[in-house]
Figure (cartoon, rainbow, N blue to C red):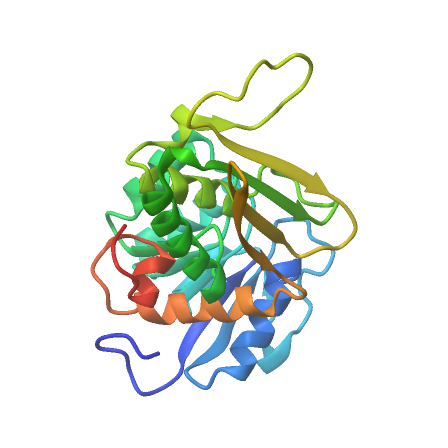
Length: 271
């Protein structure tokens, strides 16, 4: 997993959102990966655990400048606003980042792209290797099947998830749209209620389910007359997301500034 020009000593990684659902799994993935060590752990100002000592003697902090100044890489799972705050500091200190935050508004996405002009940033709605293979398969299936097959996506996540649809579901819809030579905003149907009329030709439906502690399930249906194709991914833990984020951060080390995705990390063909 070593990136071009990577040093032989383990890379020091700052984990942003270190005590969150994903942050805890990222820290576990770092412990299991010999090429990295936990260099810093960040949480939001006012977090009750600030000052707690974590593995390796790392103390939980809210000081992004000090944390990133002591690290070679950063992995970020946080709110969009908090993520951008950290990325501004990372850009100043030239620290490559892997970002798993979703739910960015258009203006926030624009700033993310601007910051990627200063440092390498791998931004992924989902760092799972299998999910990114699913994106690739969805693109190819949509290209081959065409609009004779209606595309519908159903996603299920835990009840505490704050954004809907999930970033993964939107990325899956985008893969379908791109496979058809279209863009998702022109085709997405995110809600159905009342007398909706017939299904618009070429629509890409995305439906959201929430409940329990489910880490994430996504099913893509291609439905035609008398047949359907289903592509699905189901998670039982968050560990594969965490391992993928570590892989992405290591890949970013030594890269030129730019906004990258997990498809590039995995070397999958361009869509």
